Each structure stands twice: as structure tokens, then as C-alpha cells.
Image 1 (cartoon, rainbow, N blue to C red):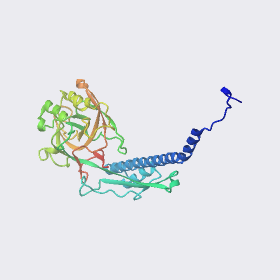
Image 2 (cartoon, rainbow, N blue to C red; image 1 turned 120 degrees about the vertical axis):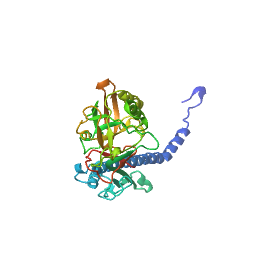
Image 3 (cartoon, rainbow, N blue to C red; image 1 turned 90 degrees about the vertical axis):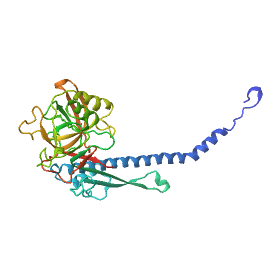
Image 4 (tube, rainbow, N blue to C red; image 1 turned 45 degrees about the horizontal axis):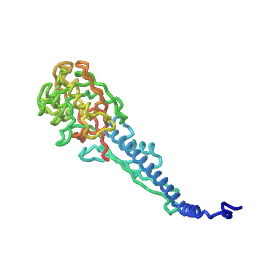
Length: 352
């Protein structure tokens, strides 16, 4: 067969195709190796984060037991061990079972308030075996502290979130076995909760309460020892502030509106909507029973709450808040439960 001009057609060698094929054959092992490495590394970190989540949950469960011993008959160590293994059956606790709780700066002299959960895991490799690496090993740890809060002093720097609001210590926690945030609806006036006339640098009266809402109370409150009187230990008692006034407006302006987009489980550490409330005993003042007017009541503990919403409608105003299982900034644990303190007046904090 002849082509144009009478010259014969000839098949020309596809030189470029042959070179590309050669390069692909040479590079193929590298591509496969890279893909295999990505699979092994991804599997390693998947197991790592699963194990870290397991020890975090175990530490929080153990800290809850330390805070609520009456509701945790198994004990902190046993509970933490069970949580870790139930959440990740592949990890190896070190030690197993979880070590007994210890004391730290939050609870000098005991009882122990800190629990640490540590674990290790070996993750087998598949593709990395081609280069002689058969497995990877990692270690994870989590530490949490739990116990009754018995003192609060405004921090020297940062946002002070101690609010002039007293919350009934007997009705705060209804599920003492859970660290899941629990929501509560507070109605205006003494009962479940009520505003407090704490004074301090803000002064007294409605304007003082509004000022303390805006800036946080600057002072020290201590949990009642069960015997002292308001005259002998004034820092163990708080005084109610009757009426509505501008208090709900201040709550809405300074402790709710600025936190758009934040939630109880996702917010900055210094968020103004993460507030600390004194837990009080409304029944202490027998003569008035805190049903109306002004009365003085003892502090029974503290609770950190997240402000979910504020309804400012005069006498029908209300606040909806969620319990946050962490330590109020400026708060401290007690070496032991003081007389009269109930399960529920607690604080739990992840230290790492």
C-alpha cells in the first residue's frame, strides 16, 4: 500500500508511549506504598483518638464518683475501669484496674479528689510490613478532679462569673449518676432560685445586683459549716434581693446576648454565659422561709451553669440554664464534705 505521493506507509514506533509505560511500572510500587502508608497512618490515628476519648470519659466518670460517693457504690477506680473498657475494648489500661484516686492542690489532706486513667495500645500495620514495620504503639492519659466546692474567691484576672443568684441546693441535680449537662427552668423570685444582694464593690440594692451581674461578684463566699451564724461567719451566708427591677435586663444584656453561636458544650473558657451560682438553703430562715421580702440563707455549695435563654417580661421573667460539669473559676474543693452538704453541690474538672 502506498501513501500520498506514491510512498509506502510505514508503522512508526510509539516511542513516547513506551517511555510512559516504563515510568508507570517504575513508579507503581511507590504509589502503592504511599497509599498503603496513608491507610496505616489513618488507622493508627483513628485508634488513638478512640482510645483518648475512652480514657477522657473514664476519668470524668471517676471524678463524678468522687463528687457523689453516695450515688457511686462501685467506687471511682472500678467505675473508671469499666468506662474505659466499655468504650474501647482494644486498649490496655496501665495500671489495670485504674489506680486509686490521689490528693492534689484542690483537696490537700484528703479525701482524694483526683483520678488518672492511662492506657496503651498496639496498632497492627499492613502495608508498612513491606518495609519491615509491623505495628505502632501509643499511650493516652486523662486526669480529672471531682469533689464538693466549698469556697469561691473572685480570680485576680480574667472574667469573674460568680452571679448574685442563689439556686436551691436540694433541686439542682436530679440525675447524680450522669455527667451529661442537665437543663433547668428557674422561675422568678425565691423558691428554686432568687437574686442575691451580695454587695461588694457594686454596692447594695437593685443597681448593685445589676452591677454584680455585669461584672461578677468580687469577694469570697464559703460553704456553711453547719453551726456558724450570719453574725459570726458572714461569708457563709447571702441575703436575698426581692423584686425584679433591672436584673433580668442585665442578665440578657451581659450574660446571654454576647454568646451568640456558643453552647454549653462549645464555648470559650472565659465566656460570660458560663456563670457560677451559689447553692443555698432557702429553708434556713424559718421565720420568713424566704417566701417574700429579704432573708439570709447559708451557702451550701456552687454550681457552674450555662445560660441558654433569658425572658425579660417583668414578674413573669425567667432564665433557662444548663449545668456544666466543671469547676467554677476561682472555686476550690474541700478536704471533706462539710456538715449538711448534699450530693449535687459538686464540681468536676478535666485537668488534661
